[in-house]
Amino acid sequence: MTGALPDLTTGLAFLAGFAALVTTGSWRAALRALLDLLVAAGLLRLSLAGGWPALAAAAAVVALRHVLWAALAAGAPGPAPTSPPPCGGEDHRLALAARGEHGEDRRTTA
Image (cartoon, rainbow, N blue to C red; front, side):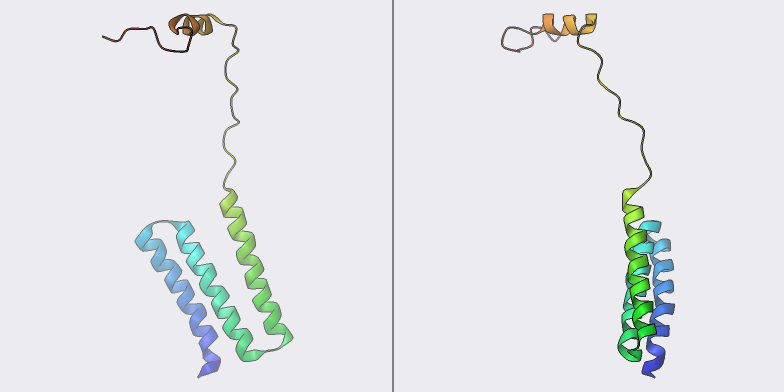
């Protein structure tokens, strides 16, 4: 019975990941749940088998989880930041004229 526990945990991990996807609608949350439960299944397999192949499988699952989560956390590159307009234009002079000596706003609001 205990030999089937890692396989059962692996199957439940996929089921939990699908349930998280359906209920939350967030594929990142679903993937995180799936990866965490696959790590748990790998550690169960390691504790029961206790050999070099089981250790390699658990290490591969942990490494895959870290690589995937780091790639997802980085996200897609966004647009390049734009620099502010130069300070020598007419808009800059109008803004300076609207402020007083101590930076208070001299414009009146209606």
